Image (cartoon, rainbow, N blue to C red; front, side):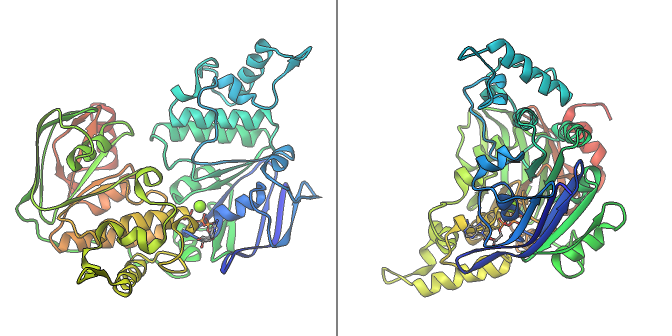
Length: 479
Ligand SMILES: Nc1ncnc2c1ncn2[C@@H]1O[C@H](COP(=O)(O)OP(=O)(O)OP(=O)(O)O)[C@@H](O)[C@H]1O
Ligand SMILES: [Mg+2]
């Protein structure tokens, strides 16, 4: 066994994140780690990569006792974790980043030629010699940056590479490329631990899997020997009734109209969104969908054309770290601060009412937290995303602009959010739903339009689209 973790425990104050987890990963396998938001996946991997010390439990690496003091120590032992917020030096070149800390020296000087040779060999081994070694990392796409980090892991002779939700900010076309690189790492005997909420991905890339629930390992096995339903049942502890619950809702008068709207990244977009309508906007990353929402919401300049909104609009930003949540505030304050009016009585803030409202949203979205007074920074990634969504719902807008609302969210919670979107439509709200996950667009929306290179196509009923026809429209292929 490359990695053996036994009986791992880790608590953060009163929160038990790991409650006796066992995990075994073989050399040269891709092992998927799956589980609900807050199940303990990231924490477990941070223990493995030396970010946290476990409170109890044992770890072995290639049969030897293993207890890294910090991430650097873990790296020295060949355990590398790659985060979503990639940890590269943006102003340095690709080659310098790949070789950072292991620069070949000749007589005390760094040999640029040897540095580039070794970096080139790593990129070659991963099947990507086309990446320009001399380009600054800041000029690369997220997908290419990820490859640079993986090349770096190769140079460090990593035996274990951990990827925590690596595809959630990748363009669709970059996903097969990442999978190709993971396969190469596996062929070279590297063990890859892969965290993802997309079971389709896990089925494609992983050999075995382990399911975590409430900080415990509750099942695992070989991919292909069990079906998705079984895995989901392990994850959530019950059967999932319906992934895409459809609630009947009536479509009314127009509440949002764009006429030839142009903003940086968008050319002459026109659409009509009606009360009770769920309109999905598909497209590749960078197609201009986020820019369009931002212009509608007033965050980006309208160069020409018009935006007409009836009532109040609210935006759920895809960038929850930057624009989403105030990391230093509590869950309750994040939920309610932007809309306190209902809790002010005679000029005084009614804290009890504010707390009750926070608790309502925590329950409604099944947010895993100790309560409204917990700092939002202590929540798992997916649970922070739910807080951002709940805050928007709390605002009670007429037009909801949702940019990738289920990114990083587990399967069962996704189903809850789809149901919630259905209820919002039922109550007469209009929803613009930007997503890169085609099954949810097809499963949830009434109508879908595809955006490509800043141009928005005509919308059509969801039933007239297929995943294939959406992708064709998104990449501009004749279908
Ligand atoms: N630094 C921290 N301080 C306090 N609590 C924390 C901290 N990090 C994690 N937790 C808690 O530990 C539990 C497990 O969180 P973790 O981030 O490991 O979940 P996860 O499985 O990665 O979830 P997700 O799918 O949402 O990313 C959660 O209840 C979380 O709130
Ligand atoms: Mg996580």
